[in-house]
Image 1 (cartoon, rainbow, N blue to C red):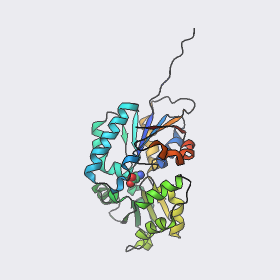
Image 2 (tube, rainbow, N blue to C red):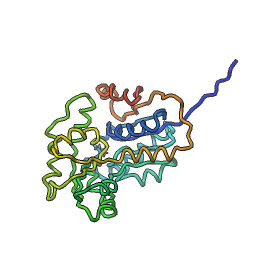
Image 3 (cartoon, rainbow, N blue to C red):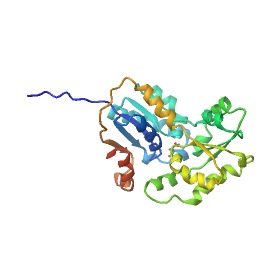
Image 4 (cartoon, rainbow, N blue to C red):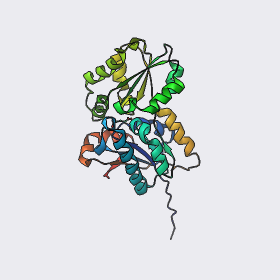
Length: 270
Ligand code: DGL
């Protein structure tokens, strides 16, 4: 009788309210194509961008605590700017595994802007965070950083992943929210400070009319995940990933084909 060695590699856990974290997972999978993945979406709590700091700084650590206990990942990526700018420190203090956060890419944007005027699109909760003030004074003190909260873009991105056309009025309103500010016409670089927004980057670019350099943190985060897991022997072939939702499972049906593209072929309600 042959005794088979059971090889298990603890998964990487990605967390967002909805599908936005796929913009981070996409980059991570380019570097680690066979890493086992659990993607957790807090659909029951969506949108985070319209919630208070108090509510989120309780909800997020509790939920991540439950997820980590249940799925025993080796690393958590908070693939959500709103959650990271509010709760990253508290999550790190309660979990005993590495936690990678997603914060607005102010530093790289400031290195590439030529006009010195940078736009920042995020959720309403993200753009008012002291975390963003700190990034701005540390890395963009000699630049103009124009912020705009565009919560509806989250829904536009979600609808695109359901195979629908994102509402052009939502896209135009986000662009106008930046362009119509003082110096808005000089913006040459836009930070996508919500993980949902890279999913509608093409639509945003069209609406701007002039060429804009869009920047988000996804590639840097993917490299950070690689660094933090450099001692892991990943499986030779990809396994099927699991999508966990705090919402209703049937709400996921319109996203199934998108999720399959990411290898997320099992679905479960938390
Ligand atoms: N994807 C989340 C972020 O990066 C926000 C979505 C929401 O408002 O729930 O901020």
